[in-house]
Length: 422
Ligand code: ASP
Ligand code: MG
Image (cartoon, rainbow, N blue to C red; front, side, top):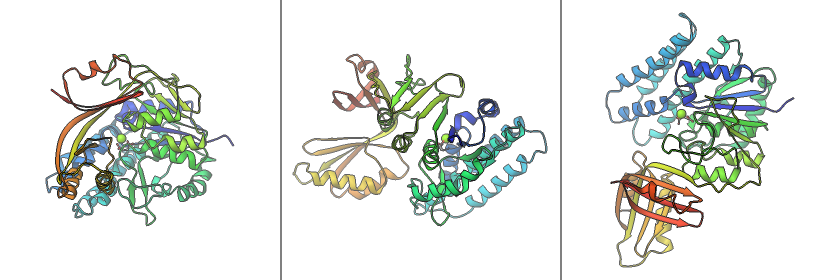
């Protein structure tokens, strides 16, 4: 049997009815058995569900938001299906279930578990709509609940994959189906060993594609994006970008580590270990080659700009007239780990440790509470972390025009700057 191919379609590729039609067109000449299609929630649905969750948590009215989300999905269906199609009661049903969940109590303590029960509705809605549409176009696909495949621990919102169980599920449940039909499933979601819904972290659908690929010993993974492939900067933010036609796994992984959002950071490692190539292609120009990430001797040295927004710079100053020692760094890192926060940048001086972290609901508050007795803590929010790999002398100044620099670090192959709009 030919090797399995995995196609992953993100939110932008299913954001409205024309996008779903375009997806079907991409599949029209490519689809065969032994194909897995992974889809994300439509457009910005996950963000909207997050808004509903935070309104609910703060006891505010979210009815306007939820009816908007429902009409968004129903409008897409109206444009794709004839009146009376089975998809309409299915969507109604999902919203009844969603409201049932939303009517349950939530507190800060059980928020992460609650979040995972609610947030996956975006993926459920999207995968149902896309599956029904493909079938209506004579592109027969089987629908599969990813929570029956992706087995994780119970680290809600950031669940870790149980690779062995997932592989067994894929081999026993997915493999037989794939021998006959293509299968469509959801990204991002999984379940723990008691069957409780979990998620793999925001934008985790790429990672799902990679998990399924390794579990099925696939031949390749293709991620369909609204950009031509992996570029040396985000074309939505910078001009004159360059497309990498190929990249070595580690270089691509490094770019995602610093915040290149084109691929989820966890996607590459499993594929690299299994030697499965990853293609990043444009769903707007599917015939173009895009980028191939694989084992290659080619080393790219084109300056690559990566911008991470919504960063917080926190500085911890020792209070006892001592200097910074390893134990202080350890103390800060221990708390970061407990809060599942990663220091995107670290700098130490004689009496302070400075770290840069992503802004996440409640996390800063908790970090400050834990460490306020040992350090004098200051922080700045709303910052950009700019990373330039392989910088040339003229790469940096134009990036700082109109900005104030709060922190800077450079090595031969990289410059990192924390900047704030003047
Ligand atoms: N829908 C989820 C999110 O937006 C997962 C994904 O798109 O990869 O985070
Ligand atoms: Mg998404």
